[in-house]
Image (cartoon, rainbow over all chains, first blue to last red; front, side, top):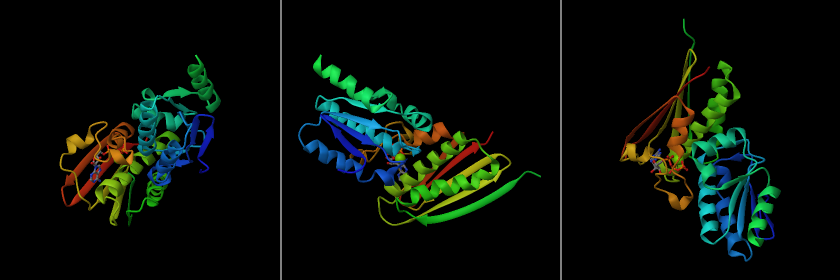
Length: 117
Length: 140
Ligand SMILES: Nc1ncnc2c1ncn2[C@@H]1O[C@H](COP(=O)(O)OP(=O)(O)OP(=O)(O)O)[C@@H](O)[C@H]1O
Ligand SMILES: [Mg+2]
């Protein structure tokens, strides 16, 4: 697992790098795919806390992975998006694709509640 | 007399140069003392165009990307040129969500981001010869 991917129960948490562009995201897609092959991952949460720069490369990754998770019955969420990050997400109309949360805990709690309901 | 400044930079179509390209343009524009949001907008648009040249224009193969940038008064004009495969149908390419590389996790929103973040965007392309994207923004 890389610095950018963590697992909490059935949640996979992707912490985007500071510069979330094509170059810095090159290997992340494959790493996420590998995590899905392992058993137990259900939901995905994208954490933008560290991001100082991003372009549509990050949006492409979010949309593609969210679709995969949702097609398998899981949930996808975004958290800690503000300023420039939020502007790019809005320009790509990506805020409608996944749910937005204040932080990772908030997203995990919401997903856990829905699963147990 | 209106202030005029100009610069040209050429570099290899390597993904590692995406950050070099946007930071270089941002440094050049910094003389206009732009607000941070304008600078972030310009960096994002440059990153989109350069990434397109690398992924689509040269399809990951080696080539040269040239950025020509002028400042006229408060107006910044940035031209990003590649000698790659070119675009057959520019209007179609500009449509939101249109992408020829969905398997690479592309969203098809690059041109939409450039149009949203800049005042003007123009694309000139010749199939087999290459593409030039022109981005214009007036700094407040
Ligand atoms: N420099 C270029 N050379 C050749 N084709 C290009 C170039 N730039 C863009 N295109 C074509 O235009 C399409 C749309 O570009 P756009 O940047 O909007 O989306 P994308 O690059 O596919 O996805 P995203 O930018 O969201 O990751 C591309 O899929 C590609 O077919
Ligand atoms: Mg693009």
